[in-house]
Length: 325
Image (cartoon, rainbow, N blue to C red; front, side, top):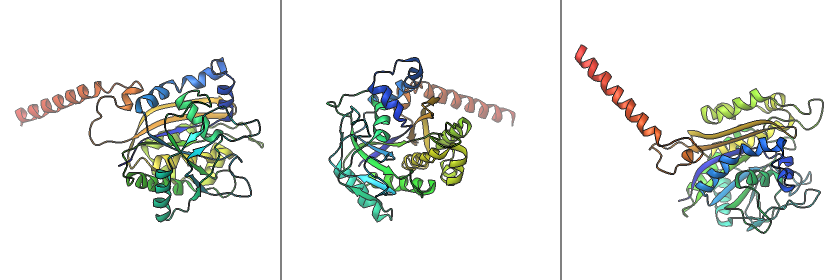
């Protein structure tokens, strides 16, 4: 059975891609950004997923105002980088997983989510920048370390889907993945945001308080996030802050409870707040050796010792109560 093992949230700022492509990652302005993803790259290598479902928004590359699907799932065998006006980014072509993608499409559509199925699709910086941040710089002749299933969401033209609709779609995707018979380890990305506005009187708007509360509630209260109306995103996070609803697809796919493994937040990168988080579905049993949480620097070895100490204290209190009763 396939299984979603983690969710990853990441901004997809195009200037980050340009910094990678032009070897500027060590410059003082950009080093601050890229250093925040070093632990995540180690986590990704240790986790070694088989497939990544990447939720992102197309930037007039695969689609245009002539055709605006609300949700579009890529079922192709490969996804070449798009020419975004200055040539395709020098990154690998994404290799798809048509069998799993088609299974997800069937399951989700029969669950009454109307997806557009794309058997041919180019991918832009909305997808490739988060992959670079988690996998490092790769040449066009290299391969991404996992198969890719793109899920493009319309957050560019009105009306975009609600946060609740996105959250519920994530739940349907989880159900679809878990009904796929092959033993696959799947991660799901939610990309875009965080708060930013590109144009208009509020160009350059960044609301760190809003962003951090949103990151907090991905683990604490995702249902609360799913109820945020479009107007609040626009007012608090800027016109382009609506991209944050895509993170709710990722969160919905993790199940009722999820634990935060790692977080990074910085401002600005270009004119955008950069947010990043790694979440894991909560397990009822204790994590074993080599867990992803340990891989990003939080000691899993200390937890059993703390648990034992807690048990000893509880036993001591019980003994004391029995003596004085």
